[in-house]
Amino acid sequence: MNLLEIFLFTVNAILPLILLILLGYFLKKVGILSKEFLTKGNKVVFRVCLPTLLFCNITNLESIREIPLNAVLFALAVIALLVFIGYLSTFVTRDEKQKGVMMQCVFRSNFALIGIPLAEMIGGSQGVTIAAILSAITIPIYNVLAVIVLNAFLEEKGNRSASKQLKEIAKNPLIIGVVLGLIALTLKQLLAGSPILDTLGRLSFIETTLNYISRTATPLALLVLGGQFEFSSVKGYRKQIVVATLARTIIAPLLGVFGAYLLMACHVTHFEPAAIAAFIALFGTPVAVSSAIMADEMNNDGQLAAQLVVWTSLISILTLFVFIFVSRMIGIL
Image 1 (cartoon, helix red, strand yellow):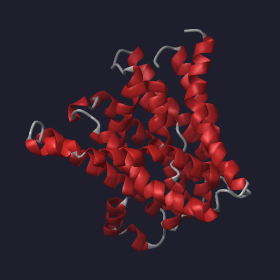
Image 2: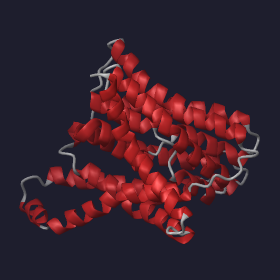
Image 3: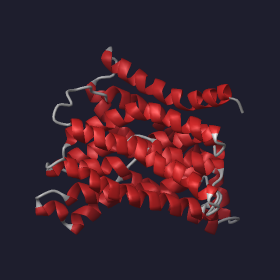
Image 4: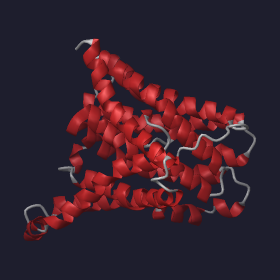
C-alpha cells in the first residue's frame, strides 16, 4: 500500500467526524442552534441516544464467547496505567476542584461518541464488534472511576460517601445501556431456538425503532459537541490544559496503540487489525463530552472540564490522523 492510499484511508476515517463538529459550530454561530437546543440535545444524546447505541452494539453480538480476552486485559492494563499518570498530572495544580477533572481527562476517552464510529470506519464490522465488546467493559469502568476521582479531592465529606457514589454509578445512563445490553444478549443465548425468541424476532418494529435511535447518536452528538465549543479565555488554566491535553492525546494512544505493537513485536500476544482499530478509538479519542457535565454536577471545576473537552477534541484531530497513518504504514492496521 503506497503513501497516497494510506493518506486517503486516514482522511476518510477522520474527516466525517471533523466536518460534523464544524457544522455544529457553524450552526451555533449563525443562530440556527440555540443554547437551549444544545443543552436539551446534550441530555437527549447522553440519556437516550448513546445508551441505545451501546445496547444495540452489544445485543448485535452473536455470543459472549466473541470477547477477545487478550484485548480486554490489555485495555484494562492501559487504563490502570493512565489512572496513575492522571494522578501524577494533578501535581500541577493546588485547586482541589481541578485535580479530579485532570485525572478524568487523562484516562477517560470519548469512546462511546467518537470512538465506536471511528473504530467502524478504520476497522470495518470487526472493528466495531471489538469496540462494542470493549465498550461493555470500559464504559462502566470509566464512569465508576470518574465518580470516584471527582469525589476524591473534595473537602466536603458528604461527597465521598460510598452510598452517594454507588447511586451516581447506578443512575449513569451509559452504564444502564451496557447492563441492559448484556442482559438482553444473555437472554438471547438462553432462549435460542425457543418459541419466545421466535415470537420476539417477528416483532421487528422494536429492533427497527432502537436502530433508528442509535443511528442518531453519532451525528447528533457531534453536532452538539461542535455547537458547545467555546473558545473562552484560558488564563489561569494554561498548565492544566497543556498537561492534561498532552496526556490524553499523545501519551494515552502511545501506550494503547504502540504498546500493543511492542507486545506483538516481542511475540507476547497477537492483536488483529480490528483490535488495533478499537485501541486507537479507545485511547486516541478526546475526553468524553459527558465528563464536563459530570464534573459540573459533582461540584468540580466545570469550566476547566469544558475547556479540556474543547482542546483535546481539537488536538486529537491531528494526533488521531498521525496514529492512524503510522499504524497503517507499519502494517498493524
